[in-house]
Length: 256
Image (cartoon, rainbow, N blue to C red; front, top):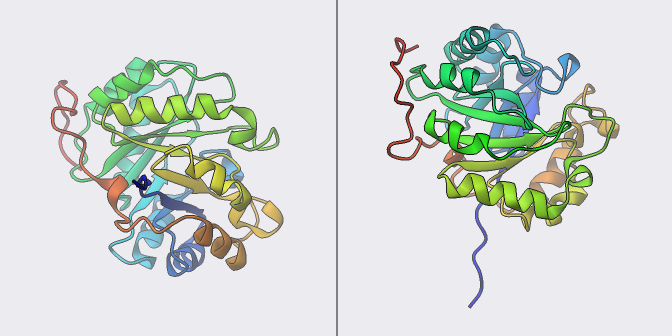
């Protein structure tokens, strides 16, 4: 019997309306609002996020990063609420992957963001500790992605062996969350990445001219990635609600 492969969503990181519109037209499943000039998870102004949301079809989810990892729970919560209010369907929050920053996770889990979903992005440069996975699940996060902070040190699959990536994917999915991989990914790495079973593959530099993540999006590079990733079918799957019982037990704030 032929084994069925999990659908994989193609996430394209963009800096503005024109890039967002182009990537959506060329078939990206998720449009990710990010400022690559401000770091691995550089945040865009709220007005830019709102413009990106307005530039793509309503059925295409828009995610937005809140900036590089912080140990300040109130700052993380405030910025997450800000991005949700700016129109993001998915708010991405960075963590160092070797740390279990329970105070920040707890504070974010106490937010009520209506239908906006929280996604953790674990930066693997200092190591990877999967103990944070159940904490994020209990706080109501919808998914977890891996990424890299130092873009000069190689792509994610060059820095972690397949065994470690598969272990991450299995751990996340076993807790009912979606698992994503990002970090200087290229189109020629897609076949290998598809075999790892992740739900989302995220690209920025691999979509840009000459692979320069702070440069402009190149339509042919986007087409190459889109051609390499089988169509997911339901583009909004990573935006799904957390599994039953996954919402945090702490007293929530007012909804956005």
